[in-house]
Amino acid sequence: MSDNKTFRAQVKSKLAELDMTQIQLAQQLGIDRKYLNQIITGQRKGEKQRAAIIKLLNIRDI
Image (tube, rainbow, N blue to C red; front, top):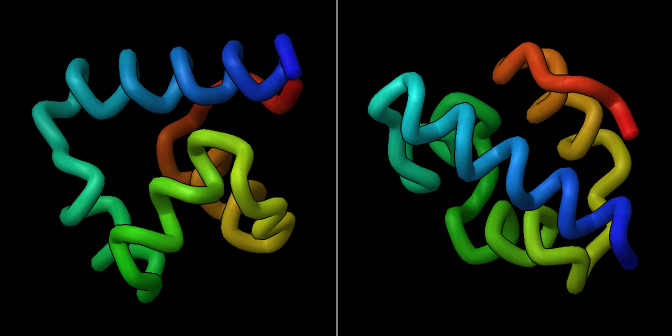
């Protein structure tokens, strides 16, 4: 679970740095904001989308 906390912190930090919302990120990924939030919080795996988030936000893969 600590890996997910790190992922969540990285996404939150990068979104703030880019002045981007989860809604905007979800739109860029072509997914629903609720689904994006579930991936970020670890409620859903969303492996393809998680990889796309990592690439799009240029964050470390953990």
